[in-house]
Image (cartoon, rainbow, N blue to C red; front, top):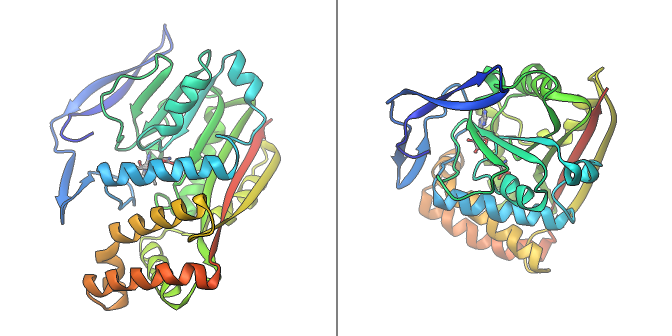
Length: 306
Ligand SMILES: C[S@@+](CC[C@H](N)C(=O)[O-])C[C@H]1O[C@@H](n2cnc3c(N)ncnc32)[C@H](O)[C@@H]1O
């Protein structure tokens, strides 16, 4: 959102439409060591919201879509073709919304984010972006969406947030018979070498300090299974190599490299080393991926509302 004014959602009850109203002149972002951060009020989220981060998220999006051969796993394709209403929570740069709104022109796609990274851009008529914090409640009425989707939000919510706020809100705004889908990578990689393992331990520590669970992906299925209003809970897991093995493995490595560079000051501090020493470790990590056959698991979990 850069320096734009923050906005508040209001709903026109008669027309059931969402509109944006400006509420404050408060600065919305600031810079730390050359990276731009948003004012994530009421949120644990600690990642930047600048162009480098947008590139990383877009890379991650295309990687994920290729790993799963598509943008969703729930059986929603017919509904999307015929025309439905879809929500993407924590949409970031809006890549998922933009791509799907082009593919399914009869459906209406809504992306919400506490600090949306989408520029004020030319976008399809059926793509809508709204600033909102899900922890304050979603600005939609009950049973509003046919499909509620969210991805890569493990750095945003504590386990308590997930169980008591995020999942109940997803269920509330989803129509009966509609679908909810979460995607995420498991923050633990397997067959990591010594440098990689040290970096991941430092990352886990950072998440733990913020009361976040870097392995939330492996818990989604159990959380959804416990919800009495959800049925047909399904989990898909895909293994993705990191390194030189193939094109996706190289993209995976590049995306992790940008993530580690982004968090370098925090991770180096946890490891008790300088940022320069941390950068040197990243060189060794590159060698390790291929030597040890490092891989990561990616998860998609979906369920239907009764
Ligand atoms: C890692 S990004 C994922 C973006 C997108 N889902 C994707 O897959 O590219 C996490 C996003 O969640 C947003 N976010 C963090 N806390 C939030 C909250 N409480 N409510 C809504 N969005 C939030 C951040 O601003 C950020 O854009």
